[in-house]
Length: 307
Image 1 (cartoon, one colour):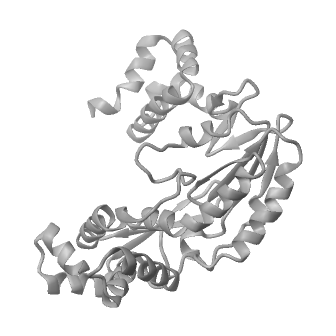
Image 2: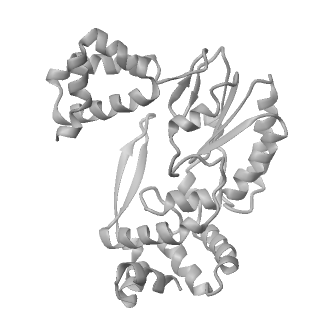
Image 3: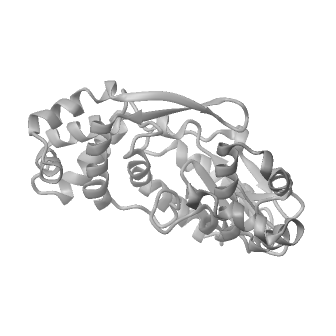
């Protein structure tokens, strides 16, 4: 079934499609970017023929899988801003983080999940389809960052996890959201989140699928009005608004001040980032205009559109 579906949408020969899937492990280029802590994050970028097939599968097969409303990353209409706004009115925040999220979702997890889901929903689905699709979605033995399909399938396979955590939180007046590997819990009831943390550890430890997920305890943080509350890189302010934070504002001011000396890449980044800030904290853009002049800020914002 899956080969025919891909052929129908790409006009590629079935044997060629099968060949690409079977040798997909060799069709990635690998590079890394640095994380904020200085460690490396590896990206696996699929070559164009593999990327085409992954996109077709992502948009026409994986899109049939259920994704829980608490999952707020990699979805149309969702954003870091909308995720942060879910928690902006609460006084206490808990952030938890999965260790090596994509790498922890194994080929066996994917195969088991796909076989259960599609053998029920698709009458012509076979185990051969399951194996081919699992091979297409994984690099060697797991999901990887960079594959077109990793975001969607990771959200789908975490549906039951999100449902359990959402049910737990509803019973204790807590707001829950998951943005990829980041779990956020918020409430205005004191000490509730310490109980929630313990229950989350139990749920994750006993999870059937994905079976290899673990919480990175070094990245578990409790915060409140006394400590900076941060959700998906945004600061939740005391007056229940969103902010990019003082440090980032200082950096932006410095770059605006030195706009004439920035190189092309620095200018392009600043242009995009200021446009993003405008959607989060427009009053900061107003202050930039007053300090540096509306003409300069307008020039910066429109820089990328003129390239």
